[in-house]
Image (cartoon, rainbow, N blue to C red; front, side, top):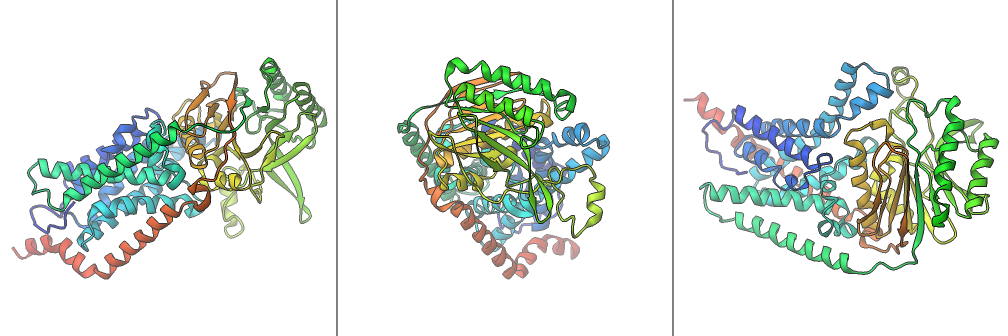
Amino acid sequence: MSDNPNCSDQERVSKSACLSAALSGLLLAFSFPKPGLSLLAWCAFVPLLKSVDNLSVKNAFRLGAITGLTAYTGIVYWLVIVMNSYGRLPIVVSILLMLVMAAYLAFYLATSIALVRAGELAGIGAGLSFPVVWVGMEYLRSFALTGFPWASLGYSQYKILPLIQIADISGVYGVSFLIVLANVGLFRAYQFFSGNGTLGKRIWTIAAAVGLMIATVAYGFVRLTSPEAGTPLKVALIQGNISQDVKWDPAFQEETVRIYERLTESVAPFGPDLVVWPESATPFFFQKETAYADRVRKLAAGLHAPLVFGSPAYKAEGGSIRFLNSAFLVNADGEIGGRSDKIHLVPFGEYVPLKRLLPFVNKLVEGIGDFAPGTAAVPLDIGKTRIGVLVCFEGIFPELSRAYVNAGARLLVNISNDAWYKRSSAPYQHLSMTVFRAVENRVPLVRATNTGITAIIDSKGHFNGMTQIFREAALTGEVRPGTGGTLYNRFGDFFAVACLALTLLIGVKSVANKEKIWNRSTRCSEKKSHA
């Protein structure tokens, strides 16, 4: 990118520029699972940077929107499956709503590239601004409108363990920063080798990208070679593979319980210290269905192992009954040891946002659950350690994992039901994000899911066991409870907050120099109009 105001066709967005922007979107989409070609992320922005070079801020936004819409359509296409198959919406409506979500996510990308272009015209180089703005906008997306940090750029690298160890300092955002900086460095190198000027100021961007990459990987290898402390804990994770079509059918409750009894009894020779069932493994109110509840308690007592499982729950509050999406702990003696309630609910899945202010919204989405959120991240004590339970997509919110670890959890447990997504990319994308929760907090994380992917992840991000999707499974293995105490534990998203603050400053400077920016971005059209 450049602040060069030369004129030749600068203000016309050519077809080749649009195709380049779309190519960037495709490269971004393919870098995430599946197919998960993670190396593509390191060059994905180069076509976009080339296409917006010398364009106005407005046209940079337009091309960024093309990139974003292409990328996020390819990443969250599975929303169509969820809405059409289980939300019972017509396929056309499902596609349109998915495109609305993709457009929302694309807005952040388009705004990022527009801010970077505005910053360049105000004298701020893309080598500095693009990584900062990207992280700032990713962080904003993590909490704006309840937050949806799905597919943050750094998650594409979940398998490259030497690279992602810096997450215990900066969270996933440090990896995102490095990827974007590398893209700018590659673009600067492309400009030089294509004969577009000399290295000049470009050299520092290339040098910074190379230097930070070397430092990051070196730190990663140091962390990977350091031994894990903690006494080994045997875990057994049960994947019942209950079809979503019959999961909540009362006639199938008995069969569901039998499946989980059979799979759980099969791990008895292993002698587990903890057994975990998925989210809503018991498709009934554990507090109310005493016959089924007694069987679950008897099972834990027979194994002499604590059992954690998902179940809907309820509580009386203010004269009314509130429903919760919860995880129960049954101790090794068969007694109830505690309950952890889901804190971050799925909007339009588990509750309807703004329904008190906008009553008509509830009518538009009739049939959606109305759950109450949990109020605090309280670890459950299983005797040999304390665990923090993340229900479903709570695993994509780093602040929740951090809260559990800071409250004393030394093992994270993610229970989920990803059957909604069928055989799409979503279960793999979901899994990739939970790897970072383990590395950020230096505690292992185990996942028990209804239809997969069930996994055992150590505190460095290694997979020590993983199931295939849509198969019954009983996955066993060992983990070493961590100690927490990372910089990320103590200071949270300080790096991302700093980037967001700098993003605001870049925006302020751009506004302060709007006349200068406007003159540069319209100089071509003015010359053409006077020609």
